[in-house]
Length: 182
View 1: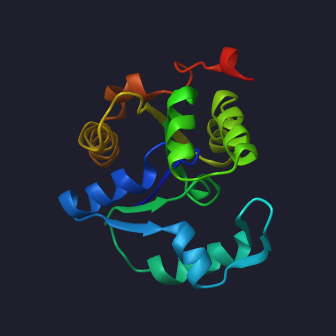
View 2: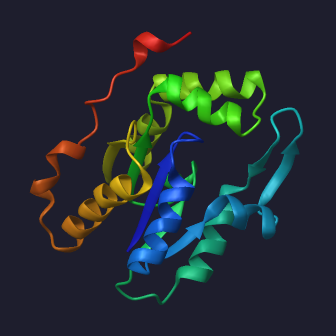
């Protein structure tokens, strides 16, 4: 089962996926690393300090490395994961807290503003709805890695046990930060 763990940069995807990988021994594919290491991009955007992923190449590569995995859980971690998976878990973060995290990473003011606006406008959540059959969201504000991991575990365990009716608290739509758009 391939599950996308997605969200605006800085919401906790990488940290919590590493935690889950060690705790549950779920296979985690850190897609952004794979894209760079395998040169699965069409160009480098110097101004935004980013690569432009070739999603067709990315999909082909993922098919090669995930094929034949049986019923194992594979988490695809990236702000692009929802373009590839049928199930997406979108991590969300209160924009002022997101700003602090992105500043600590040394992001440019423009890149910080762009990501804060994307978070406030639900950009990744909306994209996930357009691309995925099932979408869940978790507000990571004020939660540590372990707490966020427990929420993700609950979602995945309920999906695996076919008891998704227990996941109403993760249905998208309860988080609204539109008033915070600069």
